[in-house]
Image (cartoon, rainbow, N blue to C red; front, side, top):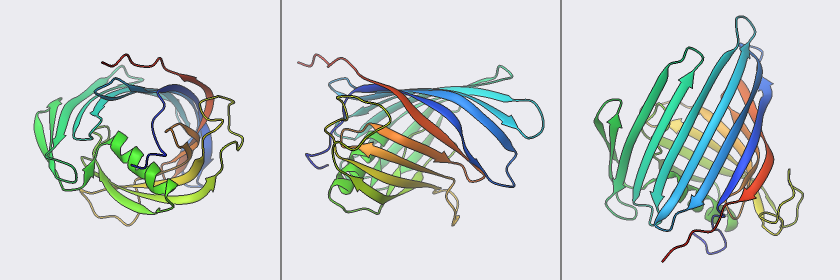
Length: 249
């Protein structure tokens, strides 16, 4: 990754609402909250994400769901651990846990799911874990080398491996107004980027979902819109704060 990009340990809170519903969508209303922490723990990066979401369909009762994601990734991008817990309005709890390792930079490896069912997934050459992917995407944006295509493994979704296409929308100079005022982003250049996510276990010309957002050179995200196809959700940045610096020896 370019020396111009890095990660600022931070906590961000986003308010969720409905951005758009297509004419054939059953979604009438969306509201919720996304809490996100990205931290430096000396030997790696941790991500903690909690999402609480209420969806109101055009017919029927509202649907509530929430999920918690915790992950750790080594700074060399070769080792990764993940834990996901999902809850729904019926009280059902689902947990996914596992770890993954690459044989070296640019090489393949394997992911091991430990829960709910033990299984092994082969990771092809060039697979990236989420933080390393973000650093790569930001470095390519900083060097004006988007679009790029990469294979990513995060363990969070229903697909084992995801193909991610990243395209530049527009670069922004440092000092451009953001959703919140913060010293974390006031002097940072940023880029508006659009990502498209494709499941690699099935061939489809259309992505499963897309994300449009503004990402600063230290990894902080603003103006996030998550597009699921028949509807899209705004994630509006409301608060942003630094996390304490790690005491690394």
